[in-house]
Image (cartoon, rainbow, N blue to C red; front, top):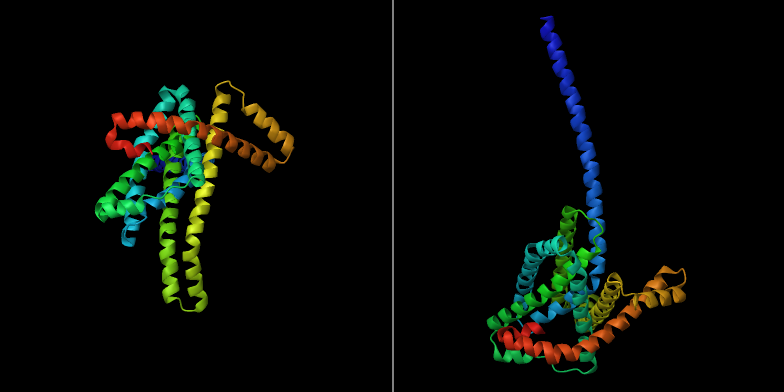
Length: 334
């Protein structure tokens, strides 16, 4: 009997020790998990900030795809585009980015610079169109096509544009990640993909329905103040879209120019990285914000110069050649 009691006492001691070890392990795992989560979120925030120019432009561009279509179809159309954007980023671009970084890491910087050239070209073309405006084609499209075909065409065009912008976002994000862990890189890219897509298309949904909300308030508002606010909201929407478009274009030029500058520096070419750095330091001194503002402005100037130089090459050479080989995708070239 005493032997049995001793055995039970030993078993109880072992169980207690095991419970203590499990508790310690769970505590350490929680600490490690919290640290990893913090690192992932921090890297995701940095990566998202680097891709800010593309994100803003994406939010500014997307609302045009629902222009001229029935109001009840606006949110379903945005959801179709958002769903495709989630798929593109998470299923196609995320694995492609990781595989590229594993097997062809030397190709990341050139591809990033190619994306930077695209941003510079897009930004410069927007500036050029502001200076030399031409009528929008949405009204002509609506006259030729019925609503169903117009919606299908718009959604396909939006998804193609989103794929290009998403590829740039994922490449910029990958280059901004500081950790070497493939798992962490994948988690960061997934967080960026989900967060940015939700942010962009959530903002787009609010933007396209804001004038409807304003009109509703103007019609059924309980007081003159509310009705006046609704009318003011409707009138302000074109101005708001113009402001967003301006900010998006400026961000594209800044980010595109910055990518080119840092890409050349990473490839061993210190111009114009060093001159820009020296100018920013001489102007801003120890003031970090001033140095950043000067650097961003100079990157933007470089971006618009490069973009304007690329415009004739893209419009007169690349687009015609692309149209010959892929006539059914001519619209995708821009």
